[in-house]
Length: 161
Image (cartoon, rainbow, N blue to C red):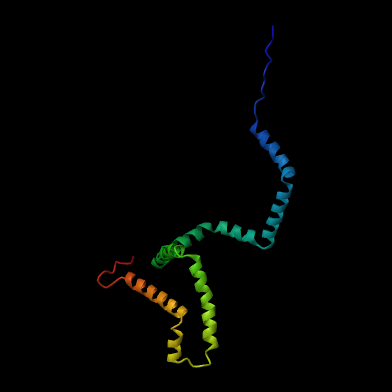
């Protein structure tokens, strides 16, 4: 009759497994460890490690100072305004900004190039007849109209949206 094969599983020693992995790590990750040593040496040479050590030592004071600064009404308004501007800028197509930012240096160079010659009223009116000028004026008027519509009035000062 067949005899069962005895199964003896040695007890698992997690410390020994970790020790074995740690001993093999320098061989398996030699290139990464050398890069890490180079990085740490560069940080030490530039004084970054000293700055980090000082920051850790003074972390409570830094946090306390930051919290005190953040509690002022000006800071709270500034943070709210930044959040609001993020929402506004996120709703504008990048192509519109590209057009605007291309027009700024072009307009400044034209204005500074013609500084020596006086600009007459009739010349300005003549230039305003161009298709581009009329489109720009229409955009400016549309913006001013919308801006005026959203300004809080004396009767309703809470109307900000």
